[in-house]
Length: 481
Image (cartoon, rainbow, N blue to C red):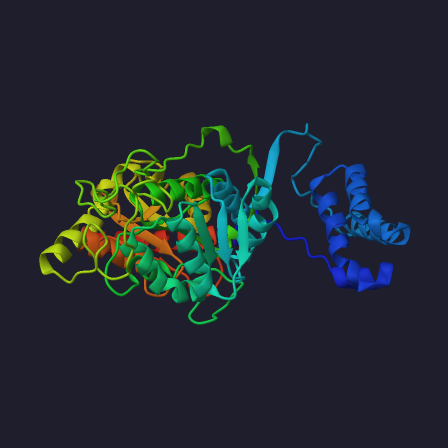
């Protein structure tokens, strides 16, 4: 907010409430009166909407809140000479949506064909469970609040094994409890989707604050190695479409897929144009149907060029097989044979290469030829883009790689993006610079990578990114002189 074009209007809401209304409880309604007057909202619309909100509580409550609106308007008229510069006019109603990131994720899951969800309430992911509980049963879905995260993830695995598109939603502590079961889904090649709404950790941490400190956990956690996918939306609209993508990736490649959001995105609201439900496609991959299999010949875990084996669900004619959590051969028979182990590991991990054409590509925003580059993901898209606009207005063009696939790591995209940049700023909400270290780990050493970190539980403000970029630029100029 440290900008010359930002003006402050100090309003003692509690004092106005006490002096004018005699009830401090209405200070929020007073603030609506203040804002409405400052930005030129149609007064009749404000009064109408306030009346509609409180009409179920009776005329006395309506009158109280109307007086609060008037008190706010009166304060503006008596104390502020400087106009705000806004002049809001009444528009035409359009077909628009208002939703949170969690709403968009849940809506995307439902449209993608998810018909089973099990979860345990945990901030900030609970909204997904509540949304699905409200709407999924209307479309044949089943939603269960499990006794804990361990039960939830195993129910989801069971549903996926039975052929149902299934998911759970959680945050860091719940994700930790699910780690072992996710390994089971990986070795049995069962498609599941896990919505990770990250918050500040460790342990209980700060449940209502944001952070990007779970990236390493999603990519590397587990005993042993399995193929997995981590994708991250950067807007509420993307939260819808990337959740659809998650279900298609999970079934097509028979892997666990994580949709990584954060409190700053999943619990933020936006007004959106109508989402294109008609454009959604469902890809069930190598799902076998009745009449295609012959008992005794079907190999659930067959070795294939792309790593993906034909998948039959219980009840498919001729599709019986063993499904052990231990290592197994192509029929599902448990074995510790070294040759088989090598082939089976390589088969499963080949999926990571086979799926690359289907993974969400990064967005390149700003001036693609700019010398200064920025990399980030998730909720940081908003402040980074605003920082770009303000830097450009000040004569400093930048380019921004908004990563949407975090694993398998998009090495070629990142390598090409940073190749000719003089400085690369990696913006993320954690202490250790997990994304920046991941870039160095995959792409190799780069003297131009610089971390821009924030880990106090609050989202980035554009000015924090701007000041870091300008400070590095000033230091470089000083060295050149």
